[in-house]
Image (cartoon, rainbow, N blue to C red; front, side):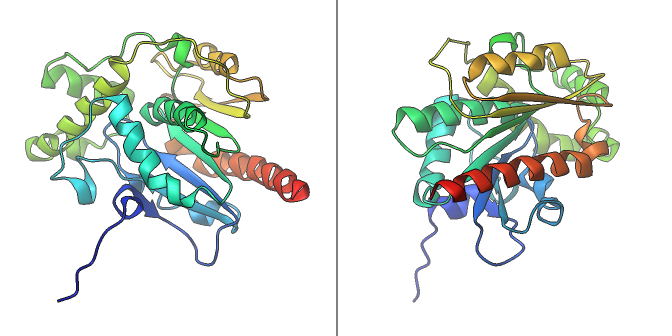
Length: 261
């Protein structure tokens, strides 16, 4: 009998490559309660040399039977275990909302471990860590949490109006919210990599553009902020524009890296 052993990368990463060898990898992490499939269309919108890989977290998709993680250190340890064998290829991180905070903490953990850091950090729809503040939805009832999700948009009514689907979605959502709500901000030595923040002009949460500008405090590298029309899930309406901005940044980063070889 053949025994197939799954590696950490197999469990934690879903690859959305077009095919061929990626010269640069873009590791992506979704919003709270989301899934890796958020990024399935990205390869067609990014330069062909970019390999898009989305993190698959416990408690959803193919890992549904695993308990969702509620502590940042445990989550980051799992992500590092998946990334470690692949860090010989240049890479960048993209995180949206909850994913932005996880990507930030992951970058610090990689640096602290002496591992290769990302070429850049791309963050969307999440305040700078020093301005994050209260995280709604952690202690609210299910009804209040669903009402909050409706107010943000981004979750279909087919899910929000279906009790059976909500039973599948809410545990992972609460776990994700607790992961960032229970991690108080502590100043750390600044990163040295570029940060590009994407925000919605009418975001009603603490991810409004002025609070997202606080990401500039977290790096000695370059900082750029792009504001799009829309609310918290502005990405649904401007994905071609956002990925075009990412592609431009990645072209520049790759050119610099290859010139320095």
